Image (tube, rainbow, N blue to C red; front, top):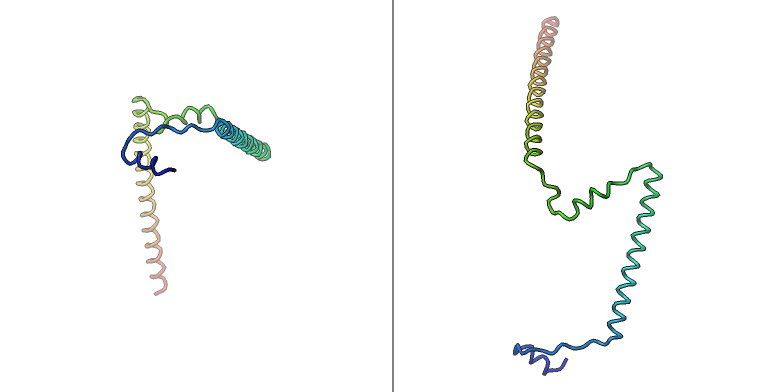
Length: 128
């Protein structure tokens, strides 16, 4: 780079764009094409290996349509107000069910604990 060219950049004066050699441009495009081909082949090999594993262990392939649908969105699929209300209703039902189960569990635990205490007291009375 010449000092004159550097000085032009410092002063903010417009710089004429340097023309690239057409051979360099063609070589760069060829290199990019080879790189893309290489990556395409590598991904095809990976997919073959994945398919062999799926066949060996009888696994099902993930639904690609579903993945493509979500791929373009950051937050995934948006839910309709009806879906949100339905999920909230189910969550409340689940929560009330869990509360009832926890209450029953605590009652049973307390009953067993008191029965154990009673048995311990009876056994200690027999020993004396």
